[in-house]
Length: 108
Length: 114
Image (tube, rainbow over the protein chains, first blue to last red):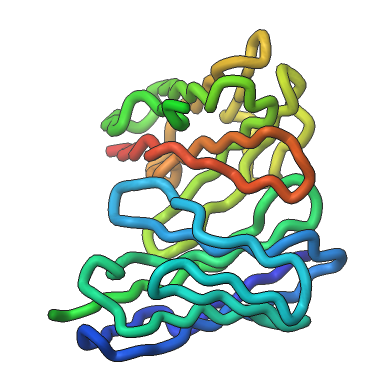
C-alpha cells in the first residue's frame, strides 16, 4: 500500500525566515509526485508535479525537489500570504494518495 | 474554464437522514474523483469515474454511499442514513485523463452530522 508521510505537522516561521517541508513516500511504480496548497475551507490548489529523481521546479518563493524516497518543498523568504497547509501526494495509477500535510504559519 | 463547482458548500443534517452532494467538473474533463477529508488529515480517495463509468470504489466507501455520473457530466454523491462519523469535507476533483495529469479540486462540501 502506498504511504506518504509529511513532516513537520506544523511550522511557524517569521516573515523572511526560510525553511523546508519534507515528504517521504513508499510506493511501487511512482508516476508523479504532486504538491498542493490548501487554504482553510477551500480545496487543494495545484503547485507542482515532479516525475523523476533529481528534478526541481520553482514558483515564486517555492521550490520543490525530488529524490527516490522523498521530496522537499523549500520556502524562501516567506511572506504571511504563504500561510497555508501544504499537501504532498503520490500518483501510481490514476488517483492521488495524499499525506496529512504541513500547516505553515508565517508571522509578519 | 470555470473550475470545479460543488454544491452545497455546507450541509448540516441529523443522524439518520440522507444527504446528496453535487459536483460539476471542468467541462470536457472525462475523469472525476470524490475524496473525503477530515480535520488535520489529507484527502482520502473514495471513488473515481471515467466518463459515466465508475471504475473504482475505495474500501472506505460503505454501502451507505453511492455515487453517480449520468451522461459523464456532473456527479452526485449520496450518503444514506448518515452517521456522526460521516462528518467531513467532501471534495470533488476532475482531470482531462492524460497520463500524470494533475487533479483540479472544487472547494468542497462541508458535512456536519448532528
